[in-house]
Each structure stands twice: as structure tokens, then as C-alpha cells.
Length: 151
Image (cartoon, rainbow, N blue to C red; front, side):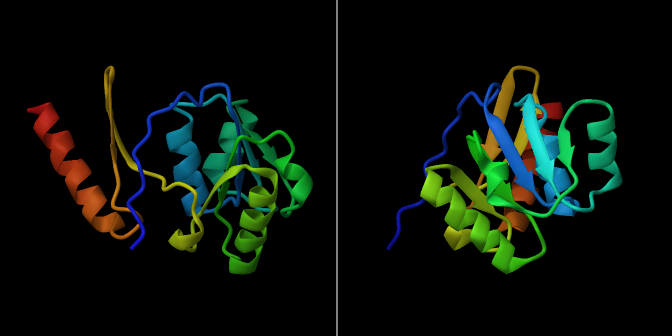
């Protein structure tokens, strides 16, 4: 049996992060990452209104293109969040060949790391995870903890 993933808090403030995809999942990931990182690029031919707004305001870079391996140049962390499983798997393959940590939204078995549920309150940062098994349970526990901290 595979061991659970180790929860690791690390400084990504100066890391180059590439998100491939411009839909709902990519948008949620970008919104979360913005609290922790400054160098975020999104590559997608189409992007949500939120991603377009963040790019226009200079918070992220939106590369209006389909995935190509050159997008990974200099990347420290990559999130594959397209709606195309074959494309996501190609991104994983390319990242592994380059030694880049990668997360793919479509298949937890291919992820080097899971994207946690995050609760932030002042200097406190809490990450919640279920080893990719139950996003619903993670959200419920995060919401309960958030309520407890407010009280």
C-alpha cells in the first residue's frame, strides 16, 4: 500500500508557477496561489473572466495559447487543469522529464502533490488534505474549522 502524502509548508513566493488551463479549476487554483506566489503564468487559448481580469491588472501572465512544452521552461511548479486528459498526461510526462513537480486535476494517481483545502486567518495557515480521495470531506472540515476560528 502506498503511503500518504506528507503535508509540507514551503515558501513559493519566488517560484515560477505555470497553470495550464483557463477554466473553473484553474481559476480556483490561481486565486489560492495568489496569496502565496508572485510569478504565476496561465496558458490557455480561452480563460475565465477572472483570469483575464487578473492578467489585465498585472497579477498574473496569461499566455493565450494551447499547451506546448516550451511553457515549462524555468517552471518550479506546474498545474495541469485542462479539460483534455491526454493533454494533462502529456504535461505530466514533460514535467517528470524535467524534474518539475506537477499536479493534474484529472487523475490523482499522476500527481506529485495534491492541492490542499486552505484556511488562512491572520498569520495562521492551515492546509487540509485527504490524499486526493474526498474533496467534499476536506471542504466540510475546512468550513467547520473556519467557523470554530470565527467563534
